[in-house]
Image (cartoon, rainbow, N blue to C red; front, side):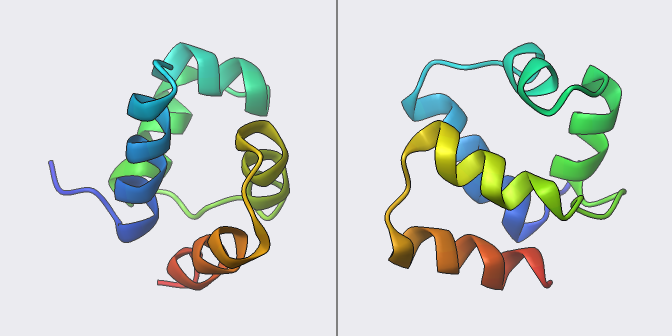
Length: 73
């Protein structure tokens, strides 16, 4: 299963923070299969996710902007 660029970057953050798909599903208030579909590139990234990711992981502006760029894949 090929991951999108967005998904690859999100997985890196998850690994660095010892988080699972369940943790992200809880953060985004969606199902685990939906998170998996977004990470794999099968579903589009919801607009609200970038802000939640930035806040949750404490991303600096440069990293947040990078996520916004890869989100536009």
